[in-house]
Image (cartoon, rainbow, N blue to C red):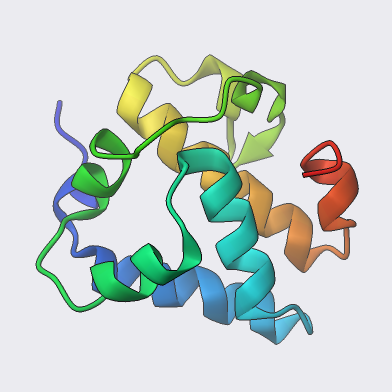
Length: 116
């Protein structure tokens, strides 16, 4: 079954992640750093992608370099264990969700990303 989130515009979903973090006093730069760590995009690329019709699924499928240590991202997001998500694309999406959740809960970005 294809998830609806795959076909949602990146330009619609990404600002929601930023807003979630901002409600808890975190910055867009922190969300961008987490997203860049996970996907290999540069912050400038994220801004450019917001002006395209790229889908959220394509954002992950076209990621320049998924971080080799991303499997360390574990825990529950949206009621489901990240590491138990079978669909590889949905698992990557949930990993970014989990990073943003942890940011919003006040976790230190450097500790979450293993020093960058």
